[in-house]
Image 1 (tube, rainbow, N blue to C red):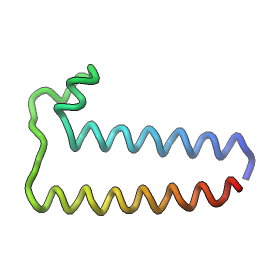
Image 2 (cartoon, rainbow, N blue to C red; image 1 turned 90 degrees about the vertical axis):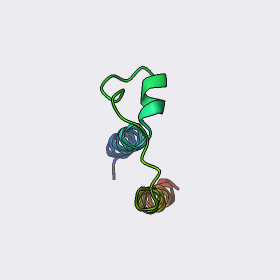
Image 3 (cartoon, rainbow, N blue to C red; image 1 turned 180 degrees about the horizontal axis):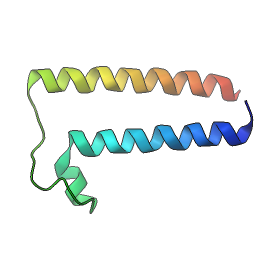
Length: 71
């Protein structure tokens, strides 16, 4: 994989992670100045927490896979 392609994938991963964070934590989005999230509160239900935990594990797995390809 070309370095340029790796950079694009990294940027896409960062963008997706940021979008997920703003969706999960609308208060954080408001503090960061991101419009469009001020009408909601964070969902702290057990189901939502489990969903975020699974997404975090997936992101960490993808990060580990990506970093091993960079070596």
